[in-house]
Image (cartoon, rainbow, N blue to C red; front, side, top):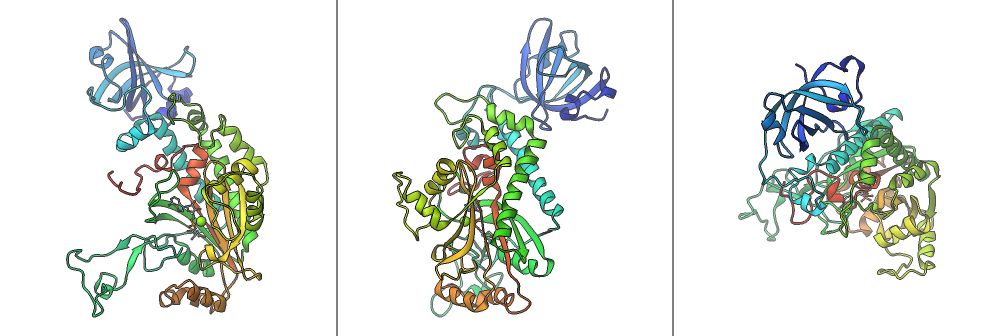
Length: 476
Ligand code: 4AD
Ligand code: MG
């Protein structure tokens, strides 16, 4: 008999009511009484579980009614309308086959567990209700991303993971090499001789696909890349990963305003799509049981109803301010920041959160940052001090999108590359884009995990990527 998904069965499809159905999954709980047992099974297809009633006369009842949480089962039974509240249908079991049981050592028990503990058993946590919800939402956000850009005429491109360029110029890269670490070839000056390495140059894992996306936008017009990016920054925060996924659109003939509007439309699209596809998941995450005194379940903004907050975002226009205005707001806030706001400083997380949470109480776009704190490729304003950059800040997290209009003036670009002490030679092809058939163009990068955090309300970025990579941690 062909297996049905629990998601499908829970809808109570007419043609299956009062018919024998077959499904597989993992036991969430077993409640045994003398005459019958209630068994709850989930197969990952939805937030909803299937309730099974097994009568003591069923063959193999003894084994089935003593299964522990986590056992893998195959169930055959009648799909019937349910009188109990909470579910439309349930199963009257005819046969339960235990594919693989569990013993008492199985660490996932029915009682609530902390997020920290679950991170230590990352190989098992996908079986929990919380992580099931997060992974399904993450999936739908990826699908929404492709739909959003496809509907607007963008082409999905794949940019390289191995690169010889430091796009962001922050020097936070993981080296890619086939050298024997105990015998690294040296040149005459005693420095490592990368010409003998696999790629014949010093290569790293990419921090962004932007530079290649720019090259493809000048030709395809509208493109986006969605891939893994890597940063070796030693950040132990709830919003940094060493390996994260980034969605980077790049658009020919767009200026900063165009790309800022695109960013807002995209984020709103993600939110609506998740509301449409994952209502059960959102509700579960918003109202899941919370451990007293622990962090489990606390939405990052500490708000009780995260869903209303998200819905509010869909309706309101997103505020846009300049960096200079942002610094003024911070200076006049009367807040005692760890890092004193002054024109010229990089905006810190505490500042971003003050702006998005306290001052604007919603997403805010900050534009035109000082050129000294931003990457080399951003278009310079005529004031000689600022660049056409934009960051989208949201409550609870801070920056989820960073983008800019790109410098298309070759002379200015050459100057900045020198000023920032970058390796001019490696950028030869990037500069040639400005030499022939160049055009104004803009793009941004959305940190996919930060966006998942924002929408799910999960407090720690390690809990929105299945196998997080952070300093001193790459076990799973
Ligand atoms: O602001 P960033 O550094 O921008 C770029 O990399 C540009 N090249 C993007 C572009 O214009 N095409 O990074 C973009 C986003 C940030 O806003 C943040 O959401 C996320 O990437 N991000 C991280 N997410 C998780 N862990 C980290 N260590 C991150 N660093 C950046
Ligand atoms: Mg940034």
